[in-house]
Image (cartoon, rainbow, N blue to C red; front, side, top):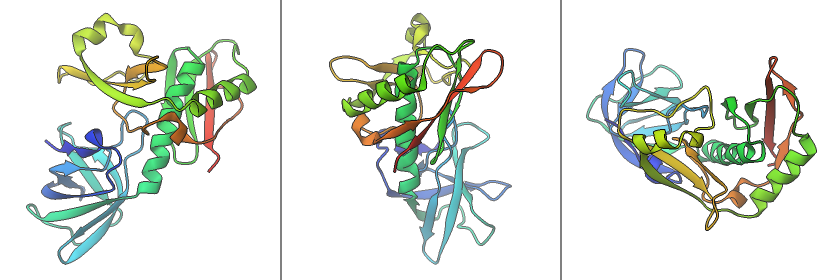
Length: 239
């Protein structure tokens, strides 16, 4: 099982690990990882691996077929470290930090538009949520203003764990219709935005910034029709 270092500290930019396996496709399974594996609409991290006598660029990160390992995907074929090799992981921090800002902003977007979420995708340049909205009930300018206010209010972002049974007793915590929290471990991670007052609380396994002010300025795009009942709302970062 790969220890997800990004879970306890999303701001880790480098750390050491050991190669514990290599996949048939050329991926490298590590015993601990600062690289977030693709999932929940968030892309896998990229960066670099360095070891005694070599290095390689990491193009992406995915979950292993067993579901408990994390695989680093080299950008191109080459001589890779063998099992047991100690490596240094160096995260492409600028790219990851944009994902963290975007991901947290999408949580706030789901607060501004309190409708069921039918899909979503996080990108470094553009991100979006799709909502079950048969008729347009929210104007872009209003969404922009409300989202900007929540960001500027500098709400703290934290997390806690609850049992699967507790989540079942509070089904409204799950906003997404297409992606459900992973089960089987007994506990579910909740991401909370807000201090004394809760702004948002929902299951999420992704990486986020420490406070909403760190998101920076966000620009809301026009509402797009995506099917008879779906509306897509995209956001971009101003920097």
